[in-house]
Amino acid sequence: MNHDTTRGPVGPAAETGGLGPVVAGVDGSVQARSAALWAAAEADRRRRPLHLVHASGTDDRALYASAETVEKAREAGRDLLVETAELVEERFPDLPVTKEYSSGEAVTALREAAGADGTIVVGSRGLGGFGALLLGSVGLGVAARAKVPVIIVRGDHERPGGGAVVAAVRGTDDLPWARYAAREAEAHKAELRLLTVWAPLSHVGTAAVLLDDIDEVARDRVRETGRLADALRADFPDLTVTTEVEGSRSVPGLLVEASHHADLLVLGAHRPPFGIGRSLGHVTHAVLHHAHCPVAIVPRTAAEPADGEAADGAAAPAEREE
Image (cartoon, rainbow, N blue to C red; front, top):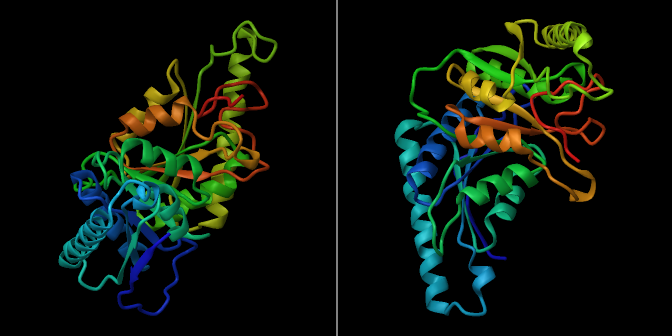
């Protein structure tokens, strides 16, 4: 795999509260351009450099692509990186920017560039054809396979901020990844809104939840969300943390509605052992396709239950993984 990396100026390391560097995929599409500018603003908030990546995918076409075609793809990719870096510099003149061209596959290139502590930012759609980086399937592939947070930029990134980062949570088991949402809220100078959505009738008729127990389940959800909020307030004493517990027939519908008034919507994603099984369920897919603001997918730890699993059987902000 060919990597052609150009490094920009590197400033002194700054305190970032645990948020790492920002990696943005670029492919020349309008969505990727918007994502790169959103990523630049994010890097600026974190006081970290922005790393731009373009992957041409020519390695996968080596058997039938001519040397001339490969060289043209490389030149086009490098030109695109330079153009995107110049666009970023116009908006953020003091932001260190690095550029990387890869001839490999897009998902792998982005994952490698992010390392162990970066955040990957991609557009919600991309260009089709030979040099595509950010096809919808690639964006979903990054979200499903990355071991670091991935932000899919949706909506109008230049709209007035809602002043809130919304995290779809279940309870104290979400504390490890909810800390990422708290750090994002601090970086955005916004409040952190913990939103628990459950479907009261999703398990009616099963041994897990009976109609007579729904009120108690709701109280349990409120208590669990409150305990999570208290833990986050202890870790982030200067951060405003609010809670909301909602019952709904449509978990993704309510999350999409919440995205209308958010700067960022944060979801925890299950990573199955050894990469076997689904990493993104139907709730996450629905939110990624319909949200009105950028959506961050943060991997859960291996010890956490899969999306949607709850001890009391109530549906959580993501669906059960089988």
